[in-house]
Length: 329
Ligand SMILES: [Zn+2]
Picture: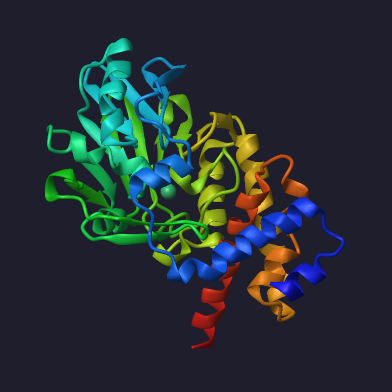
């Protein structure tokens, strides 16, 4: 750490403190035990008991629910209720109350944008109760085994789901629902946030739920250790932007609903940081030097927080390094 900090003499004290914290976490991470879920929830300030589910209407029959974990999109109509992502089992009674408040009753279909706990653990309540669960094939496979999530500063071992909580329907690239009078498309482009992401497009509303392929609450997390890929994340976002355009309604995995313009700006940020990291790697710089150079600095005030950006840069570097190593084999 000393050399890195010396190289940072021009940086702010806050940046140095953040890098020291990051470096300490990164250096000891291999020895770190994965956090139990309740510790992780406290770290993220996620509180099942004291968080209510709030509702935003996107258009007739389409709603977004905010609570603990990933945002939920819900199609509620004559044929029933289809939701995209489902938070945690502890939140399901509150989600079902929110569905009732907009005229629905129960959950017929639950689509998982991916297998991460904060988007899919609700499967544990919904599946055994009779909801049909749908996911991209690679995410469905992940749910059948224990997986370690390396979030750089934290680790979490997500346990396998029992069969009743796993998808009954899987797809590879695309799957269309004709439901409640509209067309709802599940689209998988390739590895991005994980290896099994699906973006769900509600065609009649030109609205897309991105899961964690698009984060609107800080820098994105790329789960590189489980097949995530920065170039894939850029390509995935661009492919969906090409389908919905700048007027599209963009429902992020986390954070407020936004539009295609914000998605375009996010793609520019990803490309810019990716190029800055790649240029330093081409010059032979090691990970900690690249992180210390703060390649996100001019985005931090808009996206922040800064400490999260360090983990993001770590994952971008690791994604590009893996690709370079594979090419060299
Ligand atoms: Zn995720």
